[in-house]
Amino acid sequence: MLEHLEPVRAFYYFEQITQIPHGSGNTRAISDYLANFAKEHSLTYKQDELGNVIIWKDASKGYEDREPVILQGHMDMVAVKDADCPLDMEKDGLDVQVDGDYVYAKGTSLGGDDGIAVAYALAVLEDDAIEHPPLEVIITVEEETGMEGASFIDLSDCKAKKFLNLDSEEEGEFIVSCAGGMRIYGKLSCEKENEAAKEEQTAFEISLTGLTGGHSGAEIHHGRANAILVLGKLLKELSDSFDLSLCAIEGGTKDNAIPVEAKAVVNVSTAKTDAFLKKIEEAGQKLQAEWKKTDPDLCVQAQKAETEREAFSPQTKEAILAILTTCPNGVQAMCEDMPELVETSLNLGVLVTNEDQVIFEFSLRSSVGEAKEELAKNLCSLLEVNGAVCERNGDYPAWEYRKDSGVRDKMVQIYEEMYGKKPLVVALHAGLECGIMAQKIEGLDCVSFGPDMKDIHTTKERLSISSTKRVWEYLLEVLRRL
Image (cartoon, rainbow, N blue to C red; front, top):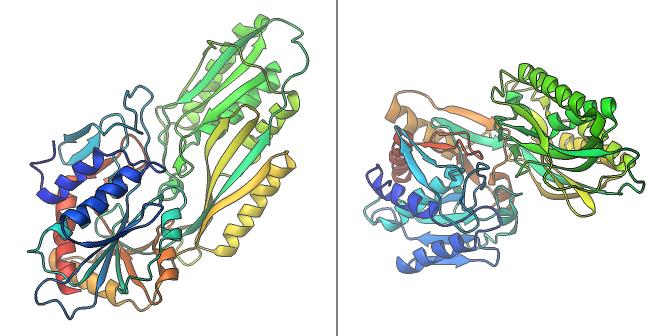
């Protein structure tokens, strides 16, 4: 499908990658693909037990005395799909399509974040005609679920101090620092109703769909609706009016994606079903009006549940609804030095009902370590006062701004010469692996960049073809001159 696109070899490898399932937690096949690539091209490589891969390539002729350069990206993708998509993203390749200047995947996320970094790297490694210094290509696993690969990887064999991270989604934007983050899991044990219903009840499934969603770091400042929290507030309103029982609730797929769907199963008095359905219709209209700017396709529906479910106890229901209606969400603070940049935020990305637990999965981000810790403490206090047990993991550091950066200055100079304008040099609220890498390699000088992508981590994700070509040409020039 992509064989006619330029740069040919970069798009060749990108399409190859899309045909290998590589959602977070399912990266063994793509890791082995990278290791086999290194073998086939007689390149030195190392593959660790998590699946991280490092590939080394000697300098091209005339570049032997240059300082080595690291090219870095991650091999896992946020694997999400539309409800009616038949693909099994654990087993199937993606249905890649081209629409004008964009590549997308039908019914699923594309994985341009960060498959294009891997594709760029492989295209550079295979081509002996490209001029470059000694290269160290680092491709990590599990970036999207807490940067476990970057935290685990052993970089003691790497010599380079110049570091090019290819995990940015806006051409002409150079990222030079980013927020740190962590994940918090609130686990609420569920009691079941121990009294028989006093009157005949009907089970309904209430669904909230059609929300815009997006990346919980890069797009959190847009103020888009969180499907889980909106549904929680709707359930609270319905519970106050109808004394309904709650049987199950779930929403979201990844804690680093703003949830676009959520649903719950409730029992309501059969005698009150007409009033109940009318209330939901009215509430749906109010929500559509409230969120029409950021989430114009929001839709609330209720239909009779296919199977009956045992209800939670009133205490468990009230605890769930209390958490959903009082927990903080979205932007918590903006940076004082850069007012346009989010400093601290959080996102309730996943809510699931298991046999005996309801689990809340949050992603916290901040460029200030103390602010991140304070938010974590407050969130855990809220969860614990409502009976949940808190667990933390995936804590990673912020990538601090480097005042003196030879890599940044050279890249800015090259960009101005090639395109006749200055790039944007920015800090990012979303997490990147550069902070972890900087802790492992003393004196690391790093810049993150990449081609234009839209709506990453969603089924609307698109990768610009023309931008991919320009960034490829820019990358080659940087390698020649860095």
